[in-house]
Image (tube, rainbow, N blue to C red; front, side):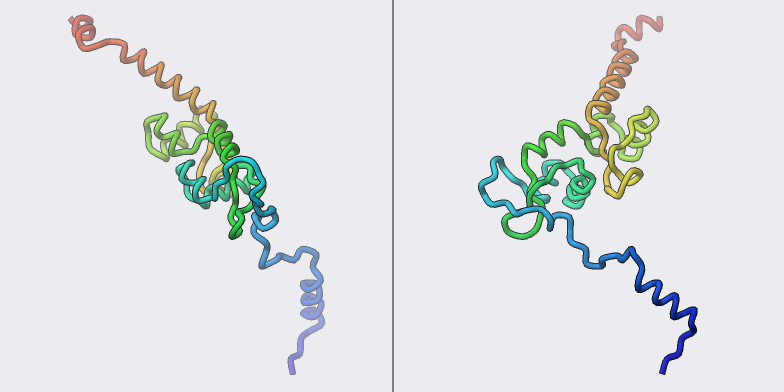
Amino acid sequence: RYVISMEQKDAVLKWLNRSEVRDIHAKQPHHVLPHLTGNESGSWLSAKEASVLLRVAPLTVKDLIRAGLLTCKFRLKRGNGYAINNTHLLEFKEKFIGIKESCLLLKCNLHATSRILRSVNILPVTGPGVDRCERNFFIRHDVELYARSLDMQSKEILAYNLADASKALR
């Protein structure tokens, strides 16, 4: 009933025999992790609980795990979500700083913070411009060092109090 040309037949056969076939129903990354058994030491958090501590969305926590910045070796006993060790979460918080916390340190808005940090060569480790993670994360030490230097500069500029300033102007 249907007739195709020899070129179409060759194209269809080539497509069917291609080496790179995309798996439409690929397993989620956490499906390959073993379930918690209850014998593991430490306290364990779900991605949602970890996101509250990091002040980000649960999706961002999952992106950080996929990027390899946040260690996760198990999934929850019930369900298939990530089980994150509280110790690993604290280690992450010591090493990295999110854009929101950077905003508070630098006392500026979200877009200005990212622009300022990039201008002084403090580049994000993960984020929209680096990988598929939705939030920028930087090395905490670098951001805190820069924030301290800004604070010292502002103290030097504001070294005069009102009385000293009025005396200097007279």
